[in-house]
Length: 506
Image (cartoon, rainbow, N blue to C red):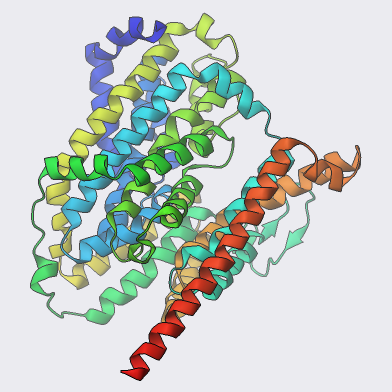
């Protein structure tokens, strides 16, 4: 209970002010398409140079937490995830917003994010030594199988068609291999200078989700919205809180999946949200409601992507191994202030680390309060006329794509991928499986190459990738996931056939 002795440091005037600024600013940055948590934290690091290590980490930690949650705003209202971690949120959240339930969807997202985030930080506080040892046991072979496990859910992410979901995922996997192989140095599918560095996830994410939405807005022109779309009624906060708490299945799966994935170095919140969404749907008796505006989809995705924040710092603080891209930026913030993470960091700098962790715990509560407070007026964005909204989203998309690397090549990639996705959507394809393939492709490829190099110096790839209880458990999960996807697809096809026959007989 050592952390309780350092709670007072959070309430020092400047520290608490920085916590408020980081929380509110993170919500705004998170709601802006293209400004990911990693980018938000990176942009804030120069502002910490004149602050003490404790104050600097409080600002960065608050921004990290609230940016992940703030990304749900644009995901729900515009179907444009503010960050990769909010991809799954858009699947049901936007459908709720279209029904005039934008405020309710935002309430659910912030409350579930807060609950998942608090549990994640508590895991960071109480289980750091145990979790750090467990994270250390993951080698290239285990991380490869985890990436493959993520690939196996690609087909089921597209609820309309299993085959089209797989094809979309395969396109994403191919796009992920464009560029130079960082390990072997081979050139892959580079037919223009803009692709030399590969396809960056942020421009790709903006293009795949934003451009089809912009094209749809332009197609509607000045057509007036229906009264249901114009009216965004307020939703009682108490009712939203009861709904989240009563959704035990979605909240539990999201929090557990997010906590586990957050602990594994290099995986990230985007996979946590998608896996939690997929598993919640698998265990739900209302599978068909997912993708149509089902609240459990929002709760599972948002509780997962914020639950991973705390555990992602476990390997960072104890092993100097970042658990996520944003944690890697936080590592830079620590090193700038002369703090070197390791097993003795809690002995050498307890006042810095415990105050920082306590601020993240309090930051989760503040994030929920400010998020809910802004949800009512943020949901009114649905009233903005389509031409104005299309213009605003276009500016944000161009700015967000260019700001990643200050490259017009990223803007061109964003536009090409977006227009391509717009065409594919006309044929029933979905962006979510494609994005998951784009994210998981480099992870699987890199760990496979690393594992193959290690295997060549030992007993060969077969032994290296299939030996050991952890490898066998992961392989079994991969096989079970594939079998379930095929079984679920056959059940769906059988049901559709029976339904068609029934209607024909009427």
